[in-house]
Length: 124
Image (cartoon, helix red, strand yellow):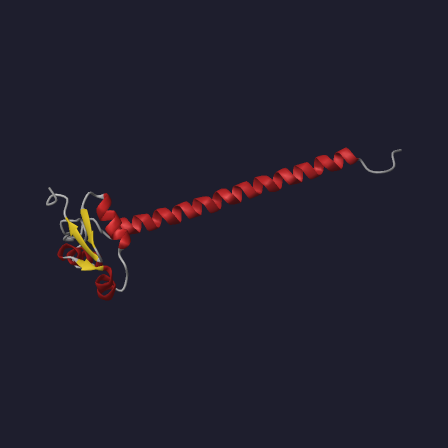
């Protein structure tokens, strides 16, 4: 008659339990991932259903929605203005907008503190 415990049997049992827990965790992570994916898809579907692309939105010659603050900034820059005037009118600097317009091929002229924007078709 054997006395004591079977160490190998205990290790196998623990390995099975560990494998079962790992499998359970994998399944839970997949479920959570699917739920997040579905949540993202549903919000994407809701955004599409709002019909942003279908609305009649007027855009200016720079591709910016008319009536927005960015449109105001582009109109100010076409006339020529300082960044201080832009901040006073909108409450923010619009350097990312200016950078984007420059990347799209429009000309930005900086003369002292004045900035002037020229459309790429008019700059020739």
